Amino acid sequence: MTSSTISGRKLAELVLNRVEGRAAYLNLALPEIFHEHPEAEQRERAFCTELTYGVYRHLYQIDYFLGRLLSRPFDSLKTPVKNVMRIALYQLIYLTDIPARAVCFSAVAQVKNSQYQGLAPLVNGVLRAYLRNKDKLKPPDRSLDLVESLAIEYSHPRWLVERWLKRFGEERTEQILQVNNEEPPLTLRFNQYQGLINHVLDDFDQAGIKYTMGLILPEAIQIKSLSGPLDKLASFQSGKLFVQDESSMLVAHLVDPQPGETIVDLCAAPGGKSTHLAELMGDQGKIWSIDDHPHKIDLIVQNAKRLKLQNICPYLADARNFKIPGGGFADAVLVDAPCTGTGVLRRRVDARYRRQPEDIETLVAIQREILRNASRLVRPGGRLIYSTCTLEPEEDQEQIQWFLSKHPDFETVDFGKFLPEMHVRYLDDPWEKWLTILPISGGGDGFFMCRMERKKA
Image (cartoon, rainbow, N blue to C red):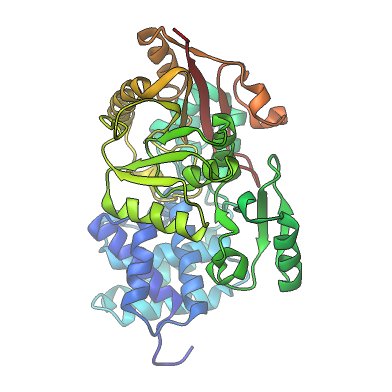
């Protein structure tokens, strides 16, 4: 790194300042800061990404420890100083290959070079105090308050930990919390419409890309190491690959699309499930891919074009009142509903701090409006598939029970024949009526899905 560039630690401070100061999303703040600092080297950008995502995976724990080490309330400090300390403590706890002396020196230098230079001795003292007392710093005793202890140790909101403990028990809840703090796997879907998967795997071998095949589906490839940016791979640029978690891939198989059918994907952006459906039906038939944001429609268009798929019809509309242009019914309607996303918290590391219990009620109401409209689009004998990436029963099992009580012309079906056999460790429910997949280490995201069929007249 030259004197004219910017360090990964400074970039990370700027990102965290923006997230906290503007209530920005981490995944959006990162590219914004990178764009504002084109001089930043790729290595420093990668380090910044590691630091920012790491801090947010462990935010409650880091803040708890800093609060114990300070003689004043941690929240009384200015945001830039807090974030410098968070970044430093994350390194001291989790990036132990970096010398502690270098971490402390860099943090103190950052504060000295800011308008808060008078607090540099405080930062130095707190970090040194951690190094002296790190073996004594622990989360609250579990025997005194299990919920609080787990919430701090794994940096999840107390209300969510409490919900999961009641539903899953301590052992399974802790497993989910642990997975949510792991780096998620990078899984690719091979475009079966673009030839044989062996050709892509041969390209991977020649490029030195390490991979394993998916845990469940033959088109899933889990990448273990890349030698460069994914979007620079020839097989990606030529439309043979799409980034998609393996749990999410199961949804298209549950739809079981057939060549020539009309399918509606009511919450389609960015197009992962729509394009998968198109591949499975040999690009024959029609898929109405619906979203109510123009920029998301653009994403669907771009992805369909890159994957060389012609039967996708992106359509700007609200899923709650969309009607098929020209009238008629669909053979299948997919509702991949907006939800609290508690099954994918390892991918959206700052989402856990934004969610509130009342969000569930708000989203349940929206999901019901979408389901009501979806029911009107399905032909007699057709199917309605409902999926979410949340673990909350109000949005999943209870939503299906509500829908069936209001729409007696629909029924759930035993859909085992549409999906491959899965080891019981992936599942939370018997899967005669619906399927709940819990997030597991090295495996797929948390997901819920159900297939219903409209009775023939």
